[in-house]
Each structure stands twice: as structure tokens, then as C-alpha cells.
Image (cartoon, rainbow, N blue to C red; front, side, top):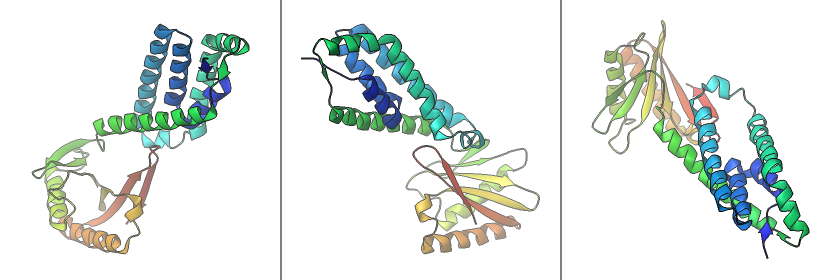
Length: 243
């Protein structure tokens, strides 16, 4: 006996698990209706749409993304999935259900929601790793290629290298794994952006080390320095703290 996912189940999977979760349920419904061609087309469109959506969100300026409520994004693809279901699946699924096919269990839906979330996270991580950490010109520093980004219309390569030297001496640049920083030059000070998980921002040892680093940078640059701690959550929301 065939088990099919209903309109409500697909809608819930889209809202909670994102487009991948709903796409998987589209795919399985088509497969169980013996429509292999439509199944693989729907799966391909789901993957392309998801990659395009996440790529757009990752490449848009943070000032724009922060102004877009999550409900707008979720509601947007939720409405799209609703119309696609109504257009391509609704009548046939309802016909088979009326003829004795069973509705798939909600536990199964929950499992595909989790799978969809996991796949979405992998896509986000893959796209994020291919994007530059910051905008502007970049130099690599040290043997393993730490990245120092800066606006070369305001900041010199000499200052970028000076930053690399201080960060190496302070132990922020190590030979364990490469990290990226951003150097910005103002008339009265330098701004140095460091990517540090926000769970460590209030750690006493970390605060002491950052305070010491700030002093070392001020001496090296002979100008005031502001440290900007930066972190992102899984949804791509940016968090900042200035020291």
C-alpha cells in the first residue's frame, strides 16, 4: 500500500526544515506515484533553488540581510512550495488517498525535516567556505597563509604586514590553521576585525589577551586601535563586539 505525504505535511516540512525538506517529500511522492522523471526533476530544482537562495543570502551585504526578517524568507519559499504542490501534486495525491492510499506518518516527516536541515547546513558550509572572509584587497601572511584583508585606498601593505607581525607575536596567528582578519584605517585610529566565537567574548582569559593585543597594536601603529570581534550563527546572522 502506497503512503503519500499530504499538502499539510509538505507545508510543515518547508516551514521547519526549509526547501530541501519539502523537496525530498515532493521527490518521494513522485517516486511512489511511479513518476521517476518528475521525481528527479523536482529534486534537481530543489537543490538548484536552495543553492541559489543560500548563495544570495551569503553574498548580499550584511546591512541588507540583517533588515530581512527570517519570516519573510521562510514565508516566501513556503508560498512557492504551496503553489507548486497545488499545481503539480495536489489533485493526484488526493485522488490516490481517496482510493485507499495511506497518509505517511508524521514521524517520517520529522525524519526528513532533520535530514533536510542537515543537508542545508552542509550546503551553507560549502558555500561559506568558498567566499572570501572579508571584502577588499588581501595578502597572505605566514607559512600556512593567514589572510589579512584591507582597503588599499586607505591602508598600506606595510601596515597590513605590521598587523601580521603583531598577531604572530601575540599568538593569534599560529601554524595550526589559517585565520582571516580585516584592517581598516581611519584618521584617528585603526580598526582590526577578528573572527572569534562569541561564546569566548566574555571569557576572562580571552578579555585579558585581547586587551594586551590592543595595547601591542597601538604601540606598533602609534595610533589608537579598536578591536572588533565578529561571529556568525548558523542562520548567517552577524554578531559584533568592540573593544
